[in-house]
Length: 325
Image (cartoon, rainbow, N blue to C red; front, side, top):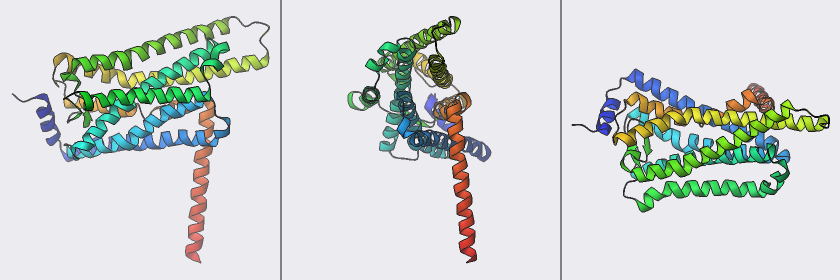
């Protein structure tokens, strides 16, 4: 009887050219969109580098993980999706598997740091400067990456089972279905605890914001009201980012759980490919969420795009002039 991996490999080989072209084009478009979108976030941060806030620093840290996925992980999967097999050597497979676990856990734990930041900013503003400063925030980000790297390295150092190519997902990933202990540890430490912290922080934040909106005291001057509105807008933007992350990763978690429970790859190839697209989509949507929800980002995006269009137009005119001369 054929294993799930062999069946998925056969399904890849049986695709016609039209299906291959559609799938590959979709993945490449997701990759290009992630590159452009997250590059815009960095461009906004650079334009406003003299007015950086701690929230801006955390947004850039989150965008960095998404940009790294677009640069290091997606192109490798695009090649494998076209060919149907792993095109590269074993070292590249280990590299992609390491990157996927590292960037995914770094993203979720960065979101948890953002949630704690919102908690202290809105619920306990008197303690905010004690807990969050630029230097301390950089330390939190460094700790997030250290923990993420340590956990993604452990299969290579301490276990016989390491990252392997999964033809349905066209990814080199850890075979969660063969090591329940590692999977449970990953779920508790890097998914369960951060998710619990995030839910608690945002629950307290919105409870506080609702209380402020309900009781508007006469002592609130115009400046204080403006600060409260600004904090609420920032919190709303970051909550939408969290919802987008959960929307993308919930199907991934469900499918990984099914594989662990059954101990085999039993799902159709289309579902596993959907799994991969959801992983990659989570690295693509944040810049668009910023644009849709936050006026500041929307305004900055338009400024950057207009400058690029003007620069392109001037370059074209200069090129035409030099060719005439």
